[in-house]
Length: 151
Image 1 (cartoon, rainbow, N blue to C red):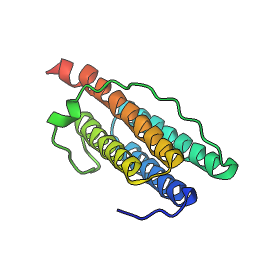
Image 2: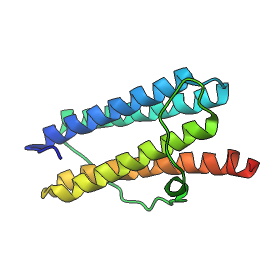
Image 3: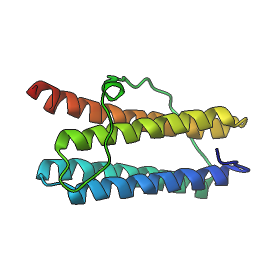
């Protein structure tokens, strides 16, 4: 695990992760054969762009507000084997991969929140974990509505 010596170190790390998520969803959108899947992944890329901008604003202004909320978890991703992206992947495969990625991001930020003593840093990581949890839920709902109902 990376060592952080300042809030700035953490924010730079988080912004890097958000940019990787933007790149990931952009690649999935470009490789999507169906228009519906392409739109879904483009929307998620834009969400990650917003997260990165929010982190940049926190870095610039030095202030942060955290509103804790419960995010439901359907746990669908616990029972699905993730895959690696490839150009002709199906909509269910792409959703599965996205769920796994969001779950991993959630776990990372949750773990980072336990590794820092500063309550401000803990709040930053908890907020990021909460956001990733919301993303995972959106993919789980999509999977439930469009994949599980077809089977």
